[in-house]
Image (cartoon, rainbow, N blue to C red):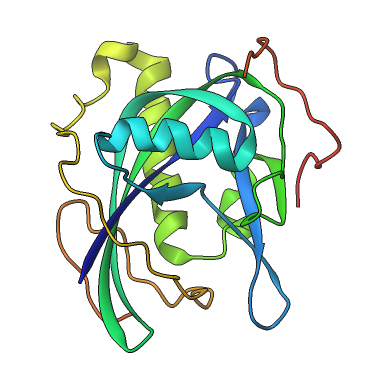
Length: 205
């Protein structure tokens, strides 16, 4: 069984210095009661492209509106649920913050927060997502140096033609996942206003 999801790393302050930039993360409680921080993401629904899913899932899980700038890479991993072995692929994108307020209204999310870009390596629970954050930093450097034209073109993404079964994905243990595949497969493992604002969900974990 194969499932496909998409998500994004939304950055506020992209046009300013790196030390003022912040990223929207979500926190979920694992089976041991630990709060694990990760990138917002979710299943690609019927008729959606991966980019459209990333925008929708970011909005649903964080309350933030964003636009896709570039692909960060894809993460592949396997898990077992209800006796079935599932291969999951998650496509991630670098996104620009457009507006909205942080919100943890999504039932699958325990907390949301703006986290300084330089703190992502210590905040993100999974090694593969920390690697994506490194890629994002490199793309942001290109954006600052050479402008939007320097960003790699988005890979082609067709609307999904078949609905996919949604399994209950178990919580991964921190650092159990592989490095982002970047094309290679790994296995076994409402209205908004511009400007960054929070609603009490926190400035950081």
